[in-house]
Each structure stands twice: as C-alpha cells, then as structure tokens.
Length: 386
Image (cartoon, rainbow, N blue to C red; front, side):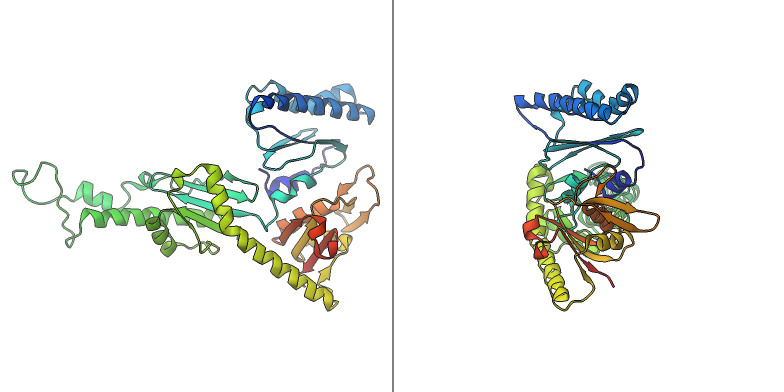
C-alpha cells in the first residue's frame, strides 16, 4: 500500500506526460482472468490519449512499456487486492494493489491523480498491530481497509533470535554444577544461583525477548504516533505492557495467540478495538471546529486556497477533506499561491488531494469523509494551529 512519502513523490514529480490508471480487481475465482484483460484495455486507452496529445509512437511505447510487462506476468491475475492503481511517466512506474474498490479510469495529464488513494492514509483510520508469540513477531501497518506487514529488521523475529544472549541461556549452557552422574542423569544441570530454578531463567529469557521487541518497535516507530494494538496471549500481554515504551499503545489488546488467527481475522478484531477511539477523535475534532466557526475564530477555515497553502507550510492541526469531491487548479511552489478553476484544465491537479498529502506530511490530523458527512458539507475544512 502507498505511504505518505509515496504519494508526495508522485505529487512533486515533474515527469510528463503523467498517466494514472485505476480499476477494481477480481481477487478469486475464474473471473481473475479479467484482471489482465482490463489492464490491457486501459493501457490501450492511455496509448490513444497520449497519441491525441501529440506524444510520438516511440515515446508512448517507452512510457507504457512497464505497464505492458504486467500482461506477461503469469502471477499478476492472482496477486490482487480490491483495487489497482498504476502511475506511469517517463522514468516513473509505480503500482499499488490496495484494499479499495477503485473506479475504472485513465487520466493523462501533466500531474498524477492521487485522490482515489487518499482514504488509505487518513489518520482517522491508520493504526498498527503488533502480534507477538514466542515463535513469531510481526508488525503491521493497518487501516479500516486492510493491513500490510512492515519490515522490522531491529525487532527479533522470535525468541530464538536472542538465544545465547540471556542469563537463562548462559546458566543452562555454561554454569551446571551438582551431584555426580551416579545420582542424576548425565548432563542434568543444577542451577546454583541463589536457588533459582530453570523456570526463573526461562522467565528472564522471555522478558529479555520482549524488551528487545519493544526497543526495536520504538526505534522503528519513532516518527509516528499511530495507535498500536497488541495481540498476544495473557502472559505476554502483561509482561510486554510493563516493559512498553511506545507512547500510544492502546489500553485494550487482543488476548489471543495471534498465530492461531488468519490475517483477515486479526485485522478485523484489531480494527474493532480502535474504531471507537477513531470515532471519539472525530467527534472531538468536529465539535472543536464547530465551536471555533461559531465564534468566527480565524483558526476555522473552509477556503480551499488558504487551506492548501497552510497545509504546505505546516500550519494545519486538523483537516477534513471530502473523498468524493475534486477541486482542480494549480499550486505555485515558488510563491505559494493557489489558482482554482471551475473546470479541469491542462496541467491541473486535484488540490484537495494535495492538501491531504501535505497535511499528513506535517502531522496534521486528517479525516477523509463523504461530502455529506463534512462539517457544513464543505468540500474541505480545517483547524489552524495558530
């Protein structure tokens, strides 16, 4: 799934012409064969539109070549989520398989069209899942639409990854004492450190394992404040929470062995934990905006050009954006001005999409909602930090 950085790189890309292709995909059954056919048809449509704009046949072929290679990927039909988004430009090829039911569309312009992917990034639905068992540790980035496992090289993969590094291991392997083998079976160690048992040392090893997991998680998540749901059995839950240093660990966890759950079930149960938290945050933000607007406080804003500029320079605390509205225009990076158009023109971008990505990049709290659920049914609304 795309990150904020992914979409920001597409927004600022000056490679042109830029082709954006989106479509719903089939994930199972005989109909999966349609995925490749639909991609081929959309690439042909993009080729036609590029030719109409004056792009040469050879340049068009080069630009679309990475997309056409998908048609020869034998696994492409079967490796799908609900939606597919493809971004193509000279020297640029990005493909995202996303848990969104995207509309089928081909857009050829000077800029990529990233608006359909914004619901994946809204902070009112982004959270993390940490699944721990002694045999496996996994960390997921999640939203209400699905989850993706994160690479976590600093987090031990399992308890075996710290074997030999704890007092327990050292005691077992290097400090046996006791009666001669005529009294006990050969090789049986006797733990002599102040009467501690093997169970004591095993507990030490588990605690050291969880301490290493937490340290790796904290390093990896240093730049985020997304809520973290812990999935682990009762014993590991209790020990981990005592050691935890991540500041937004959700109080309620999943007291289960996560290895016994399918990924879909793990995601659904974790989202059920955080959904009330997201609902509360949204109501608080809406009430705050309504109070400021009612007092004519300049921190409550609904003017799109102002919001785009404020988002760019980190002046937004909260942003509400309509998912089903597009506002076409241009943003001048040089002087920070916004030009808004009633209808889309060549070289335009969706300015609501830009505001969302810029706002997320400067840690604004972003809600992407249907227009009918927006404050005052505005296309965009925001609370300034000052």
